[in-house]
Length: 206
Image (cartoon, rainbow, N blue to C red):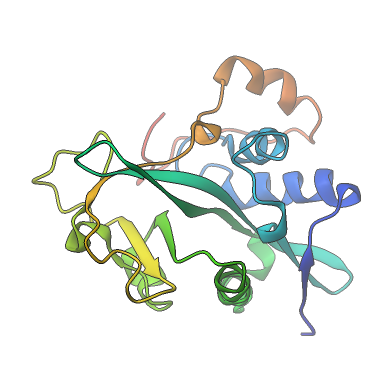
Protein backbone atom coordinates (compact mmCIF):
# COMPACT_ATOMS: atom_id res chain seq x y z
CA UNK A 1 0.00 0.00 0.00
CA UNK A 2 1.42 3.35 -1.05
CA UNK A 3 0.57 5.96 1.56
CA UNK A 4 0.69 9.70 0.92
CA UNK A 5 0.50 12.15 3.83
CA UNK A 6 -0.26 15.77 2.98
CA UNK A 7 -2.01 18.81 4.38
CA UNK A 8 -5.76 18.94 4.08
CA UNK A 9 -7.23 21.38 1.54
CA UNK A 10 -10.75 22.77 1.32
CA UNK A 11 -11.75 20.28 -1.38
CA UNK A 12 -11.09 17.50 1.15
CA UNK A 13 -13.37 18.82 3.86
CA UNK A 14 -16.50 16.77 3.27
CA UNK A 15 -14.60 13.55 2.55
CA UNK A 16 -12.57 13.96 5.76
CA UNK A 17 -15.71 14.68 7.77
CA UNK A 18 -17.38 11.58 6.35
CA UNK A 19 -14.27 9.53 7.08
CA UNK A 20 -14.21 10.81 10.66
CA UNK A 21 -17.88 9.93 11.05
CA UNK A 22 -17.23 6.36 9.85
CA UNK A 23 -14.22 5.98 12.14
CA UNK A 24 -16.02 7.11 15.32
CA UNK A 25 -19.58 5.93 14.68
CA UNK A 26 -20.92 4.01 17.70
CA UNK A 27 -17.42 3.71 19.20
CA UNK A 28 -17.66 5.94 22.28
CA UNK A 29 -21.43 6.46 22.22
CA UNK A 30 -24.36 5.80 19.90
CA UNK A 31 -23.50 7.76 16.77
CA UNK A 32 -20.72 10.35 17.12
CA UNK A 33 -20.01 14.07 16.92
CA UNK A 34 -16.32 14.16 15.95
CA UNK A 35 -17.18 15.03 12.34
CA UNK A 36 -19.00 18.16 13.50
CA UNK A 37 -16.10 18.92 15.84
CA UNK A 38 -13.57 19.12 12.99
CA UNK A 39 -16.05 20.99 10.81
CA UNK A 40 -16.29 23.67 13.49
CA UNK A 41 -12.60 23.59 14.42
CA UNK A 42 -11.39 24.74 11.01
CA UNK A 43 -12.93 28.19 11.50
CA UNK A 44 -11.85 28.71 15.12
CA UNK A 45 -8.71 30.36 16.57
CA UNK A 46 -7.62 27.08 18.19
CA UNK A 47 -7.12 25.40 14.81
CA UNK A 48 -3.55 24.79 13.59
CA UNK A 49 -3.85 24.51 9.81
CA UNK A 50 -0.24 23.43 9.23
CA UNK A 51 -0.81 20.39 11.47
CA UNK A 52 -4.00 19.29 9.73
CA UNK A 53 -2.90 16.19 7.80
CA UNK A 54 -4.63 13.52 5.77
CA UNK A 55 -3.43 10.13 4.55
CA UNK A 56 -4.28 8.89 1.07
CA UNK A 57 -4.17 5.27 -0.15
CA UNK A 58 -5.74 3.55 -3.13
CA UNK A 59 -6.79 6.95 -4.48
CA UNK A 60 -8.88 7.95 -1.49
CA UNK A 61 -8.55 9.59 1.90
CA UNK A 62 -8.17 6.91 4.57
CA UNK A 63 -6.97 8.85 7.62
CA UNK A 64 -6.66 12.29 9.18
CA UNK A 65 -5.29 14.05 12.24
CA UNK A 66 -6.00 17.47 13.71
CA UNK A 67 -4.23 19.65 16.27
CA UNK A 68 -5.37 22.64 18.31
CA UNK A 69 -3.94 25.23 20.65
CA UNK A 70 -4.32 24.63 24.37
CA UNK A 71 -3.24 26.18 27.65
CA UNK A 72 -1.59 25.15 30.87
CA UNK A 73 -2.15 27.37 33.88
CA UNK A 74 0.54 27.26 36.57
CA UNK A 75 -0.20 27.97 40.27
CA UNK A 76 0.67 31.68 40.05
CA UNK A 77 -1.91 32.13 37.27
CA UNK A 78 0.56 32.32 34.41
CA UNK A 79 -0.70 30.66 31.24
CA UNK A 80 1.65 28.63 29.07
CA UNK A 81 0.62 27.74 25.51
CA UNK A 82 0.95 24.17 24.30
CA UNK A 83 -0.92 22.10 21.73
CA UNK A 84 -3.19 19.07 21.76
CA UNK A 85 -3.69 16.33 19.19
CA UNK A 86 -6.96 14.89 17.99
CA UNK A 87 -9.16 13.68 16.69
CA UNK A 88 -7.18 11.00 14.86
CA UNK A 89 -9.32 9.08 12.38
CA UNK A 90 -8.67 6.02 10.23
CA UNK A 91 -11.24 4.49 7.90
CA UNK A 92 -12.56 1.22 9.40
CA UNK A 93 -11.42 -0.73 6.31
CA UNK A 94 -7.85 0.55 6.74
CA UNK A 95 -7.33 0.24 10.47
CA UNK A 96 -4.42 -1.81 11.86
CA UNK A 97 -2.34 -1.05 8.77
CA UNK A 98 -0.05 1.59 10.31
CA UNK A 99 -1.92 4.61 8.95
CA UNK A 100 -2.62 6.16 12.35
CA UNK A 101 1.01 5.59 13.35
CA UNK A 102 2.24 7.28 10.17
CA UNK A 103 0.00 10.31 10.76
CA UNK A 104 1.14 10.65 14.37
CA UNK A 105 4.84 10.37 13.61
CA UNK A 106 4.68 12.74 10.66
CA UNK A 107 2.64 15.38 12.46
CA UNK A 108 4.82 15.25 15.60
CA UNK A 109 7.89 15.79 13.45
CA UNK A 110 6.31 18.86 11.83
CA UNK A 111 5.10 20.17 15.20
CA UNK A 112 8.66 20.04 16.49
CA UNK A 113 9.93 21.88 13.40
CA UNK A 114 7.29 24.56 14.03
CA UNK A 115 8.73 25.15 17.48
CA UNK A 116 6.17 23.38 19.64
CA UNK A 117 7.74 21.71 22.65
CA UNK A 118 5.03 19.38 23.97
CA UNK A 119 1.81 17.77 22.75
CA UNK A 120 -1.05 16.68 25.01
CA UNK A 121 -3.67 14.09 24.21
CA UNK A 122 -6.36 11.89 25.72
CA UNK A 123 -6.53 8.28 24.60
CA UNK A 124 -5.34 4.73 25.09
CA UNK A 125 -2.00 4.71 27.00
CA UNK A 126 -0.96 1.42 25.39
CA UNK A 127 -1.43 2.80 21.88
CA UNK A 128 0.00 6.27 22.38
CA UNK A 129 2.79 5.02 24.62
CA UNK A 130 4.38 3.57 21.48
CA UNK A 131 5.04 7.13 20.28
CA UNK A 132 6.58 8.36 23.51
CA UNK A 133 3.46 9.75 25.18
CA UNK A 134 3.61 9.53 28.97
CA UNK A 135 1.10 10.14 31.75
CA UNK A 136 0.91 13.92 32.17
CA UNK A 137 0.34 13.75 35.92
CA UNK A 138 3.82 12.26 36.27
CA UNK A 139 5.06 15.72 35.24
CA UNK A 140 2.77 17.54 37.66
CA UNK A 141 0.26 18.45 34.95
CA UNK A 142 -3.37 17.63 35.67
CA UNK A 143 -6.40 17.81 33.43
CA UNK A 144 -8.96 20.44 34.38
CA UNK A 145 -11.98 18.87 36.06
CA UNK A 146 -10.15 15.70 37.12
CA UNK A 147 -9.33 15.31 40.84
CA UNK A 148 -5.65 15.83 41.60
CA UNK A 149 -5.42 12.43 43.28
CA UNK A 150 -6.56 10.76 40.06
CA UNK A 151 -3.53 9.69 38.03
CA UNK A 152 -5.68 9.89 34.85
CA UNK A 153 -3.57 7.59 32.73
CA UNK A 154 -5.64 8.47 29.66
CA UNK A 155 -4.30 12.06 29.77
CA UNK A 156 -0.83 12.05 28.28
CA UNK A 157 1.94 14.28 26.99
CA UNK A 158 4.66 13.84 24.41
CA UNK A 159 7.75 15.97 25.06
CA UNK A 160 9.19 17.21 21.78
CA UNK A 161 11.78 19.05 23.86
CA UNK A 162 12.85 16.98 26.84
CA UNK A 163 12.97 20.14 28.98
CA UNK A 164 9.54 21.42 27.90
CA UNK A 165 7.96 20.91 31.32
CA UNK A 166 10.99 21.58 33.52
CA UNK A 167 9.78 23.69 36.43
CA UNK A 168 6.25 23.74 35.03
CA UNK A 169 3.27 22.16 36.77
CA UNK A 170 -0.37 23.09 36.78
CA UNK A 171 -3.76 22.56 35.19
CA UNK A 172 -4.16 21.76 31.53
CA UNK A 173 -7.26 22.77 29.60
CA UNK A 174 -8.24 21.67 26.13
CA UNK A 175 -9.64 24.45 23.96
CA UNK A 176 -13.39 24.97 23.93
CA UNK A 177 -13.36 23.94 20.25
CA UNK A 178 -13.71 20.34 21.50
CA UNK A 179 -17.12 21.16 22.95
CA UNK A 180 -19.79 20.35 20.37
CA UNK A 181 -23.27 21.91 20.49
CA UNK A 182 -25.45 18.80 20.36
CA UNK A 183 -28.44 20.87 19.19
CA UNK A 184 -26.65 21.47 15.88
CA UNK A 185 -25.70 17.83 15.34
CA UNK A 186 -29.05 16.66 13.96
CA UNK A 187 -29.06 19.28 11.18
CA UNK A 188 -25.41 18.55 10.38
CA UNK A 189 -26.15 14.83 10.16
CA UNK A 190 -28.54 15.53 7.27
CA UNK A 191 -25.49 16.11 5.06
CA UNK A 192 -24.38 12.46 5.36
CA UNK A 193 -25.74 9.03 4.39
CA UNK A 194 -28.06 7.57 7.06
CA UNK A 195 -26.40 5.41 9.72
CA UNK A 196 -27.98 3.57 12.62
CA UNK A 197 -27.05 4.61 16.14
CA UNK A 198 -26.41 1.66 18.42
CA UNK A 199 -25.75 1.31 22.13
CA UNK A 200 -22.78 -1.05 22.53
CA UNK A 201 -20.81 -2.43 25.48
CA UNK A 202 -17.83 -0.28 26.41
CA UNK A 203 -19.24 3.02 25.18
CA UNK A 204 -18.48 5.98 27.42
CA UNK A 205 -21.92 7.60 27.21
CA UNK A 206 -25.32 7.33 25.63
